[in-house]
Image 1 (cartoon, one colour):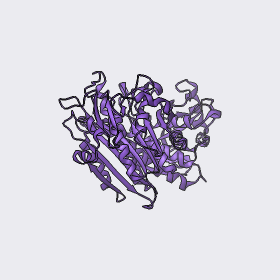
Image 2 (cartoon, one colour):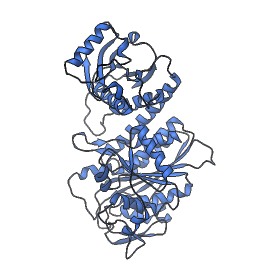
Image 3 (cartoon, one colour):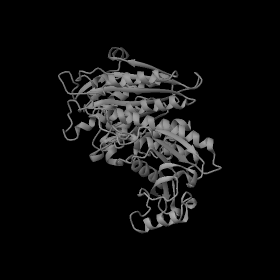
Length: 494
């Protein structure tokens, strides 16, 4: 899809479809105010009919537009005008993008950006528009019989901004939104691929491909032999039962002075998680292909950073393994020594994400990062606590936690901070090792974060538990690509 910005008046625009904002209370939007009286009356009658109430997310297609150069109008509800905020505007944008992508329109004009929205400047509106249209345009086709796509091949989206608006700011937002949208769809594609395709080796190949696409990115892939030499026995214990060998993917992006400390992002990449000897129930086990979503996310954020040529240094680590039962598989009660030198009693082999992250986080310390953020589909406990709306945030640093919280709020990819403190550490006591890999049945997301905190020393670190937000289940099953928007926003703010 091609994107562009325009400040041209509505009556001079030519398009197949226009996204026209409307309000629940009947007050005219900025875009509607410039339409002819007859067309405004037609819109008023359509709303009075009850076919749409103008609530955020409501849409209604009008096929008669009179002499307007835009052939059809999609009415997009914003709710009450006096209650308009970023949440309502973004909900209308998402609904309109989804509805438009089901049409055969080759050229769409998005008029939502003409509205004045508290908390959204021209940059943010253009960024959100491009990102949402990329999100709506995604189709998974990799392992399906080729089906005819009814959408025109050469599609174009024109984002209208008010005359006199900061055009440079809108263009910057458009560039950012396209990079975020493409990166998020890349993460979604990796997550949606089946585990017999998206293996540890496949993730490594995607990382190498990413590095080849930018002169600022270099890739290093650690194989099993190198990990053994480094003492990464915690990570390696997870894949003992699998015939697929692990990979530790290390990508480095250099966008600032070599003396500038990098940001480190670490992702959990369990390409399929059976639970190992602590076997999971069979129901919905197919969704365990999404257990590599943390790795897919950090690779995608690296893609966005390189595309935007951010003036920072960035290190991305993705620990890629497969967790399977087998004759050599790690057993409950086995003890391994992590790269840090500490021993771990593995009481449950289904608590494997923290085992691979323990060594990956410790390895990340060698880059002396200013911040470390790990991303993992780590615990069902976090899903039970927060559902599928918020990712769980854990950090010993109030400053870093606030940076991530704000990035989540600004990007519409929110997090909720959960407790992390020494009072939870006794849960991980072991009679036979320095620590156990699980605690009791209570506060499971927190005790998992406490476990990870043992391997970052005094680093400026945060943990994002995305078990509830990385994918959708049911009829809409599929990867969400979260938290790519949050983490890209986080890097942009830096």
